[in-house]
Length: 191
Image (cartoon, rainbow, N blue to C red; front, side, top):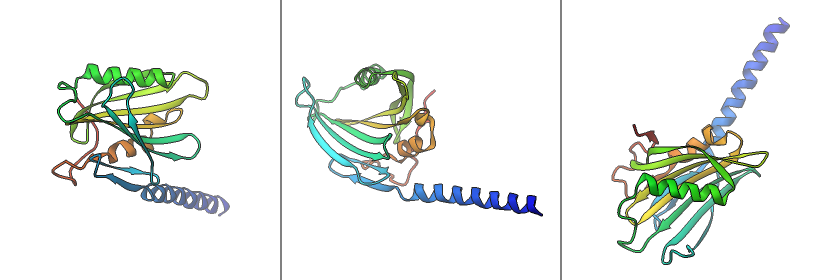
């Protein structure tokens, strides 16, 4: 009997933990930025900022960032070009350069990179790890749309980029210009 009781208690504990995790996921809130043309689910309302990108004026950068605890950050960066001034050919080379600049700025190394369909658009995804001890793991997704380029970034403790929370954040990103807002926006690999 004691073993059966212990096993039952353990199963109830596991079920409560799973229910708590599902409840935590449900507590995330969708944030919409109609002016910037996107929606995404954050763990709470993000802090916002904007500014011009030095040397690339009149390119404007809009940042939306929410911390989840001390080590995890979810962010959307919108690079907005004046009408008709966005790169004509958004290529894998351009996306690779953007990821390389991010890695250099964050003193990280690129572990994995490649084409990815994100929010029903041809995009790019990379996993970047900090070089320092206690490594942070970054999942970076780049999505072009007209005169805007979106960077959907999640960074957290080691292995975060391959985890459910990072994927949930990425998969929740959608463009408000998408004709089917209920359509699949999940990221998929491009062969």
